[in-house]
Length: 72
Image 1 (tube, rainbow, N blue to C red):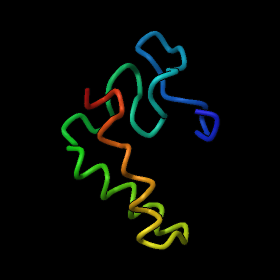
Image 2: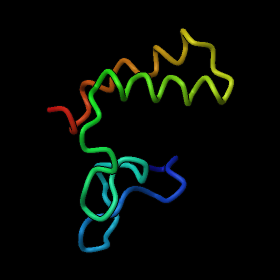
Image 3: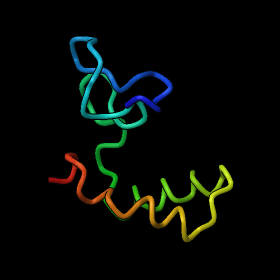
């Protein structure tokens, strides 16, 4: 969360989430509740590539997405 520009998502009570980022979690709910792991990996990969990361590096950075708490 230290790299999240907003310091993390927000819980329903307005407190900061220590589990989810501001791009994924707002007001105690997922911002994209129906996104799949595959879709999330592709979204993150595209975002990283837009920042100039080569595709293979972006792919490496998305490998752990399926292990995140959201998909347990």
